[in-house]
Length: 135
Image (cartoon, rainbow, N blue to C red; front, side):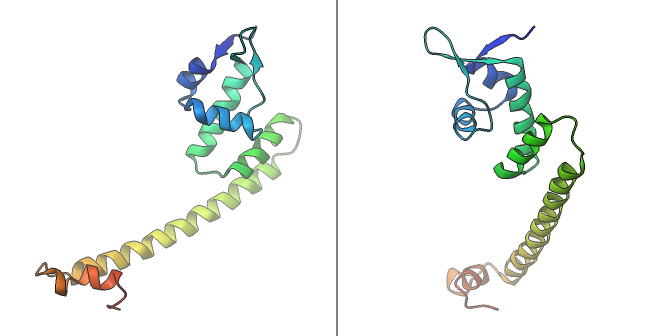
């Protein structure tokens, strides 16, 4: 039997802030909540599981559109896994690209820091590099 959860309890159970829950509902990631007689949102256990899925996917860095696709796949339990695998593989490639970019940024920042001799701001290599004067 499914239990009912107020939005505050749903937020507490999943670690997702109330405005974010409302946003996910607004964009269709989370189904519209049932309303109580007093007009308050009421969520079921299935909503808790769905929101936990969304939260975990967001923690892994998936974009909203990818999460929407993954949720559609999850809703069709008898379908093949290949589409979900492809989404995850694309995301892994995006992460690798971000890591490469961050490594490049780190090298550039290290170069700026290493060139700084901490004299005064007029000869500061960090300031010069950010201003585009040092290459």
